[in-house]
Length: 415
Ligand SMILES: [Zn+2]
Ligand SMILES: [Zn+2]
Image 1 (cartoon, rainbow, N blue to C red):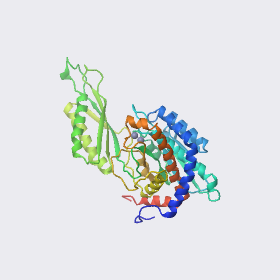
Image 2: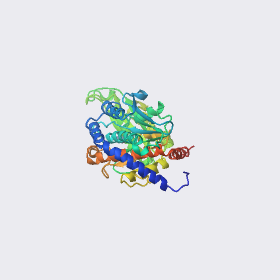
Image 3: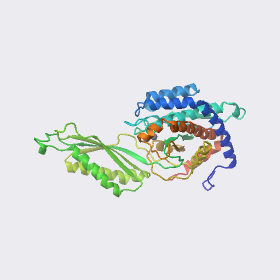
Image 4: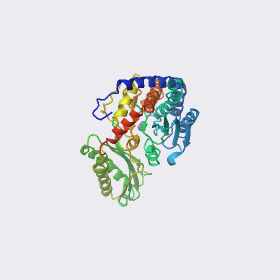
């Protein structure tokens, strides 16, 4: 496959994928009860980033029972794991990611219970299909790796997995994220996590306010400055913040305040350059006006934008079609968030497609949290497992696809 080939799989590939998709779909159907039960169990006990013992344990036991060798607590994260199973000798190494953390106050409003069980279910289905009667005599060789990646909501678990070398030797990495729409090529934003700390001087708020330096004033000024700055930044970029600390007592001038921010852009250079400088100036200016000192830290790893891979996007579109979902493999419009899968996509060919749960119901809402455990959520678990399994099965069966994905990866901007 070359860059000027008309998009779309050729007839042979489509036929192969249909056969593979039917084979793995049958296995997913047999696993559906276990997968949805596990999805509900994870949803019922939401765990915050890096505290996902329950979810991680369920997934590890499930994969061990399916014949995967499981290594727990990898990359210095107690709830991260790697489950691996080789088929034959050599062949491509395909990684499937499972996320499983929840959001503070909202539970599984990002539907990571669906990501987790669709990913693990896909791996189990491919393993059963690869060792089943259909592939006897012509068994594809390769290795399936399931990476349990904790702390996606702000913690950057995948960044640590990349840094620890867990992606070394991986030929392609896939996952599926639930959403209010189906999409295989929507872009994501790079993201820097920031924490601004202001230090002032405590004093009695009524008896001696003139002796105080109000750190909450600096935080207030920062929010106003950022609100005004938004008009002067690129329309595709985002800045948002919350006051994490704003004082303890009403009758004490707050001596310390903390504002946590995310700044985002699809353009890494703009994000790290102009946007970062402008926000730093807002922090410094707010501190100066309030007579406080300031510090600006990056408390979590930055997320890179997801690097698109058209070969994997076209494969995904075909796999979506096999579960009755029509998607345009080139459609990238719409608002986007950020994901640590972006960092994975910078080191190996990767795809982060979106799978519709309820049309138009957006992630990080209470409505989405409810849907992620309802009938539509269960359907997403089964469809997600089936389409990821079809993708992984196709990549293991057709090494030319892996080569084409690598070629597309190598042809990315700057290389
Ligand atoms: Zn989220
Ligand atoms: Zn998410």
